[in-house]
Length: 327
Ligand code: NAP
Ligand code: G4F
Image 1 (cartoon, protein in one colour):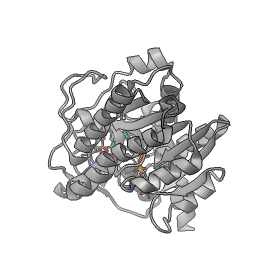
Image 2 (tube, protein in one colour; image 1 turned 135 degrees about the vertical axis):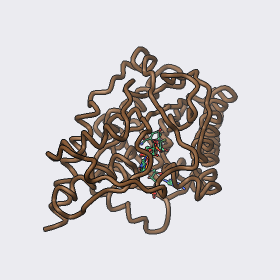
Image 3 (cartoon, protein in one colour; image 1 turned 60 degrees about the horizontal axis):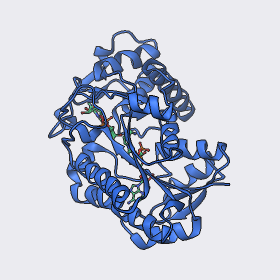
Image 4 (cartoon, helix red, strand yellow; image 1 turned 45 degrees about the vertical axis):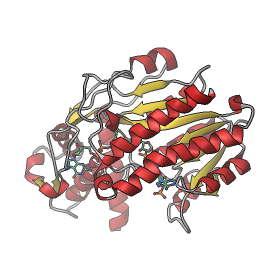
């Protein structure tokens, strides 16, 4: 039975990846940070077979202990402070966790492997946010990185450090440059979930409107359940490498609003949407659209859920959740 260690197991991707690996017969260990983390219950409820370990990406010795207990064949580093807007307010913390945390877990991986670097494979959750002020359209693996947020800068550090461990030590290390991926498990601070939750509450008469920031930004949005499969496929390749994982299509926030409101049977979304500079960012990433050719050709990976299906799935889930809460 192969063994996997996942950091960020309490997050959106951690839950989907746990389900995928358990379905493939893996023994799965999930790293959870903090004393009495309230999300432990979510992990226990959703993926009860995951073995929970405590540790923090900023604490190397806790990572060394997690490796010693789990003895992993595969390591998936999904842990991060992942909310871009928050990263301007907490730039130093974001750098420590999302950036230096990658170095810590790479170092823990190397120490665990000892003389046999081939005994473990490593996945780093890199991000399309690294492209920032995009230098190519669409963005591919070779596109110059130009991050526009402290989060993006921290991810660039983790990305290059992963490549450096591959080149310096021969570690089977892969970096997945994932474009935005969403689901009913997405945190409510991100724009898709903020919108689908608000649409559900507006439909049920629990809320009058939703207040957003920049409506012109465009993102390449896919379904998180599809994207964790690409992570796993990367670690099954003979060599570690970097891959863009995206749908190859981009949508504006306005299109997101249109689809979400229509999914609840509301045609005129403009009547319910307000804008507030509070939600604007000091520097915006205007356009993301990925070129997933390499992932398709090398990994045999393709997205299965369309943008419209994804947003409809999220609205329906939020309607059910809000109805249950209102009871
Ligand atoms: P998420 O839901 O925000 O989950 C982040 C996870 O990181 C949570 O489990 C969180 O734990 C954990 N974490 C935070 N600080 C930590 C620390 N100091 N030590 C250990 N773990 C810590 O993010 P996601 O959407 O699942 O994304 C997974 C990864 O992919 C992240 O690295 C993200 O930056 C990256 N990524 C995401 C997307 C996307 O569109 N979703 C796209 C590209 C890349 P708590 O629950 O305790 O806070
Ligand atoms: O949903 P978002 O907060 O996602 P963002 O910034 O693209 O980051 C996500 O995707 C990255 C991959 O590219 C990940 F690495 C990262 O961890 C995270 O998962 O914002 C999307 C867009 C932005 O342009 C933002 O300015 O939506 C715009 N937006 C407009 N109004 C808003 C709002 N975003 C949020 N969160 N809240 C608003 O009210």
